[in-house]
Image (cartoon, rainbow over all chains, first blue to last red):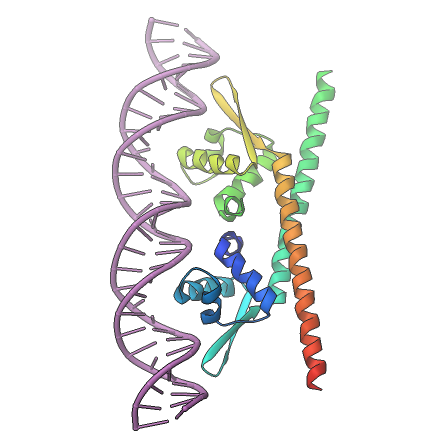
Length: 103
Length: 103
DNA sequence: CTGACGTGCAATAATCTGGTTGCACTTAAT
DNA sequence: ATTAAGTGCAACCAGATTATTGCACGTCAG
């Protein structure tokens, strides 16, 4: 799911969806310098990552952000950051203890 | 820099470094099911992303996490999450306004 | 000095990725 | 009924990634 966020084109797609609320692959391909099919594939990746959903309306498919998925991802990122902070604090303590041992 | 975090092996390397404080590519290759050279390449990527540094000690090179780089990355992720929250709130307001227009 | 250990570099191979194009199929609109 | 718009599927391609192996070079220990 980090891989979904790692691609710049996909991030731009998320931006566009956030700005417009919803859009079709064809519409989006007009906003980005890639073909519709490329957009479709990116949307499939974002869908698999739970960041986006598409629902059929007649002959078109409207994609929109999926708040739940976004929240899950951001929560995950936050906890990752927190874990790192804890580990770094532990390392810092260890380093300080080593310093005390030396002096 | 998200691409650096997107690979599972690299995340495991960060975990190992966080747990041990520092380690050489050779040592790390004993912990993961890949060759030393693969580890070296991953460490190069992490280094380029500013998440890790290696310093030579005699004939070996010790790699350790780079707190500054980690903090930068986590800050970036946090602001990304915040941006998304703002956008989603805007979408929600827009949706509610649309509801009001309909009724 | 000699051997063992750790590293660096290069070539190679396999797989993934992002992208394209062409064509068939469904759903409006005239 | 025809035509146009939007989608879905498949083949294909070039380049990036991940990983391997082999070998040369520096460094420490006996």
